[in-house]
Image 1 (spheres, rainbow, N blue to C red):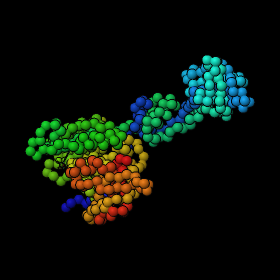
Image 2: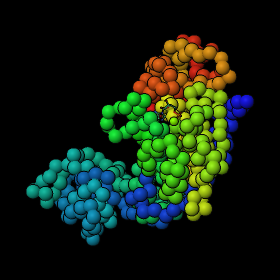
Image 3: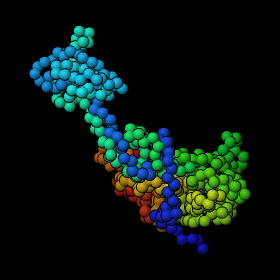
Image 4: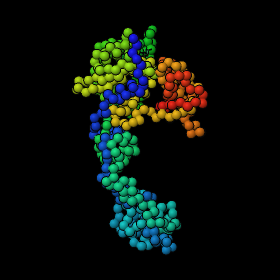
Length: 411
Ligand code: AMP
Ligand code: MG
């Protein structure tokens, strides 16, 4: 008897509930981008550390300009990285560069564009008025010492890494990026560029999945194509479990006689063999392999049909990889209630369909989608150019002009 279908939500719940967040590591700031911060970060010092000029120009006393005095002797010069011990007095100016400390006595800076150099630079004519504080960036203006700049769980985008550097966090505690082994299985697959012998096809899933793993923020480890041979597959899976934090396989999880992934994983891992009520990507396997250090490594057995592999990765493996890398919900791609510009037809079959569509925001502010073309699970070319997955509940689909929930893969 065929196993009962599970819903995509149940399947995702089974997966997420068994995937543990990776152990926290202390990493150098240069490696922190792309990781999730594991601790709160408190600034030990002010940023900027001292009051400094926002422009190239002249440090002055604003009140001097109010009295109509606009020609001032230039009594010193201060560049970024330097300091001057000359205290600015009434009726004087100090030439100052962007980022240089504001001299004691000055309360404003006039930008060079509003000045004229006189007498070879020994004095200056100011051609604008100034308000106190003008063009001065105060100490702590960006971050005051003692402020919690980021809380645990923050994704370290490049600008976040920049801020960490600005508060002297040279090394940070993060949930690391996962190392994810990717392998394809199948006697028919070739990837050496040679001619196709009868019955052979060119491998495509591994190439795609390596990219998808990287796109999910993890580090792909390409373990190549493994033949439909139990011993070879077991050796590769055990090696993967020792080297990596997760494993993604493609092929061999259906009902075929040569589905060796099924045979091997049933033996060496604790598995959930699922038939999910979705199309494409009905067969899916998830389980845990205990590696030689006693650690449990999640393994995602994706179906071999290329489109199914992609959809299965998006709906199940990607959220799980993001979960183990410390990302908070939502783990899925952003979803939006879109307008279907073309009908997205389907027939009732008890499954949720994920049709590949082309989408984009239109002048009405709404996200609009149209069919991405052929929807066969072997037709990767049409899917490759689609940038969203339309979620069609069981039924007859969506008429042109109707609303449809889509997951946006790329904007
Ligand atoms: P399987 O899941 O192994 O039964 O494979 C289902 C279909 O996907 C078959 O037509 C396979 O030839 C094809 N397939 C499996 N793995 C790959 C791959 N890595 N690249 C391209 N096609 C594949
Ligand atoms: Mg196969």
